[in-house]
Image (tube, rainbow, N blue to C red; front, side):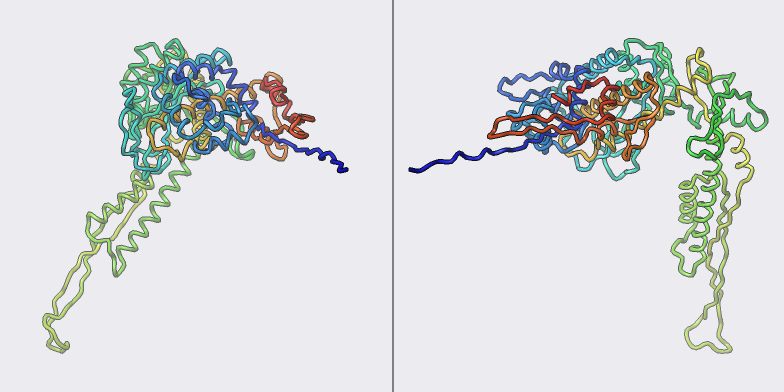
Length: 569
């Protein structure tokens, strides 16, 4: 008689990664983004197991959490708990790069302007974004590749912006590029408008279209539009002013009003109004940071107000930069002079020497302060008139060759002239109701948008772009704008909650270091290792172990308004 012993039970532990996705999903749901994507990028083929909206949601979450190429989307989704990317586990095989590419095609062909307008309006309503002060700027996104086939879409007839060479703000003129135009709200730097333009587009011609779009998004024209000096053209300023808009921008040095004021400063002193007098933020023992303003009584040629700004720290920086530029230019001129006087100089001829001098002065911005002279110096040598060994009756002829030398002097008068206006720059504004201090305050919010550009290039890694189709690149950049919007909302919500509860710092940095203004990057890193575990016995669930949250994680979720059950479910 044979007795069969029962097979010992097999236990297994299943681990599922949560990461920060429950937190990100909470904000995506609060924005109502999935419904809007499904509305504007509808799926018409009933055979599709994954809709276009869900496929785009996968790419969006991938950008926010951990940026990976599209062809690795399946691996990225598979590494997290089922359903966190908005796709059921049985449909993961449908997330091929071809499927995601078709979703990008439909997004490009959709009415993306209306889509983004509805998204921003929903954000403004649900997150109380006022849309009162909007800041605009642009940056270049460098791309590698030929991109020769840039034909319009066969279905919609739309043409993607041309990827071509232009003025590279990343200092990479060897690469083709696209122009990424972004507008953010002053309240937390929340992105409210985005579009791309051809890589060789001048910024000055983009503002009218951008402002018109913002007027439709805000539902009014009286918001304050803040931009850099490229806005300061007669056409741009007149268009906004005639349409009932308000603006603040920097007046470029090329304007006649700028030259007249700096000339007036040589003999007169403005009645400066103190705005800030505070310690240096970078060096406790450094010079104080003092800001003053002065309203020009004449105004601009168009009749708009001019506010002159004076910063003491900017004065010191400009003086140090001028001294450094002059010293560097003199060093380069000394090296050029040494080459000219050398026995085997290859720099010959007056035009070549003048070009070398001009390049040195231009590169070091020292043309105004250095006066350089090219001095001909004849060099005489004697040569026998006939061949043979020289003797007492040998005749010689004098051979004169023209060599050049350089002399330079520092124009102290030009330095003294510019010292009078160091640290000063003009702002132009058409709203006479704003005080000079308010105009300066609005302009000081402009660097926030630069922070968004830094995040999209470093944290989200918008480049390199692993796509060849220009239409898909345009659609992919739209998802990057949405990812930047999600990130900005998370960051804004946490900082506002800290202000309401009077929390000055959170120990959110590594090694429990404190942060006064936490960023989304650090918030997502805080939850990057969140996991849940399930103990199985012969494929039967024995016990579940939800994610173990720390006190700091619980506090952060409470400040963000995210329920803990999002991580415990």
